[in-house]
Length: 148
Image 1 (spheres, rainbow, N blue to C red):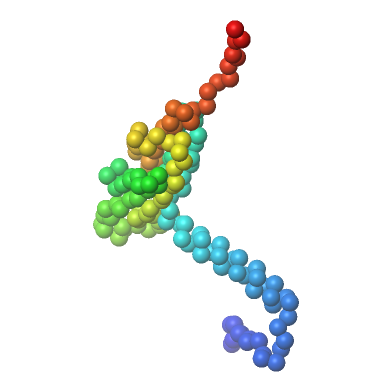
Image 2 (image 1 turned 90 degrees about the horizontal axis):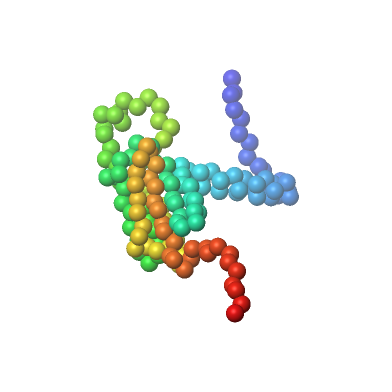
């Protein structure tokens, strides 16, 4: 009994436009799958703009603050993690829907960020990084100028 039969296109069959279209669509599908695989181990982030600062929230369940490293070089903020893996726990996992592996995320900061005042905290699986705005980048309220 044959479960699957593979047929190869014959060399005499001309290449049709439907084949070109199928290949074109499949190339997108392969790109999406490749992107999803590359991003599956990268934690998700929220970037929030507030009046005086930006806030980056990075979802990192299972990581402790000692697992993280945050660096700034040439206006690029880099968050990385190299967690210690507990082999006893890893060997007993039955189902794993979030990983705890090494990762690195980088963000280019604009000129509006005061990089000397950046701070970070970690609570409940969320790493929060505060990026204060420079004084000149903070939006000033509208005002009326009196004429003398």
